[in-house]
Amino acid sequence: MRGVLTTILAVSLLVAACDQAEEPELTTTSTSRATTTTTAPTTTTVAPTTTTSVDGSEGAIIEDYEVVVRSTSDEGPVLWVVVGEAPYTDVDLEQFVTRLVEEEEGVWEIHVFDDPAALEAGRVAEEDRTDDEVGLLEEHYLVSLTEGVVLEYHGPYEDSPGFVLGS
Image (cartoon, rainbow, N blue to C red; front, side, top):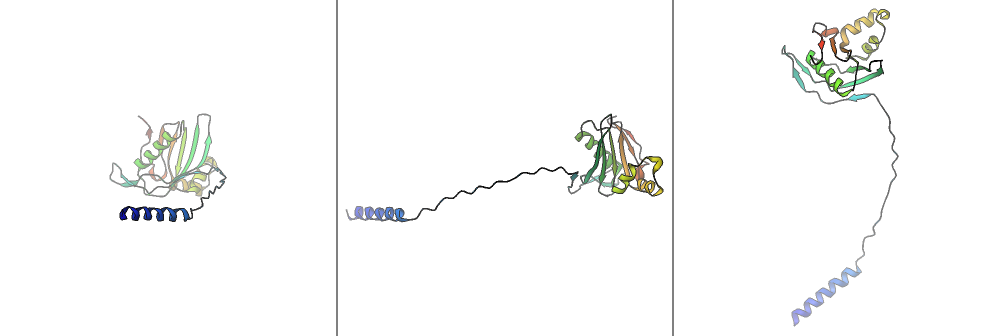
């Protein structure tokens, strides 16, 4: 009997202690967040991985690029793109252009440079280009796509043969 009384006393003390304890006050906080949407030029930056071309030279998968000018022709979108400077191979450039064609529905032309000044020189009519602009293009105009399928190499890659994508 003494054990039962001890147990009842212990439970009573526990219940009394719980009743006297302060319960934490619950608070609710709400915040309002305004959403602003802006559109910026397309820029993608990812650590490049390397590729090896048929001739054994190493290059990089092109992940760092910016579509500087996006316009429309009667036939479809025209992209003027600047990529980061790197030791690219002709295969790297082909894969990059192929990926852009897949990502940009109905793209008609793509012009790829590794220098923004060369891109601007490329947008000048051929007969109006200065000697400096021609020099920039010879060094920094890498590859183009015309008619949606014709790949042509320029500048430092002009010795690589162009071809029709998908053929």
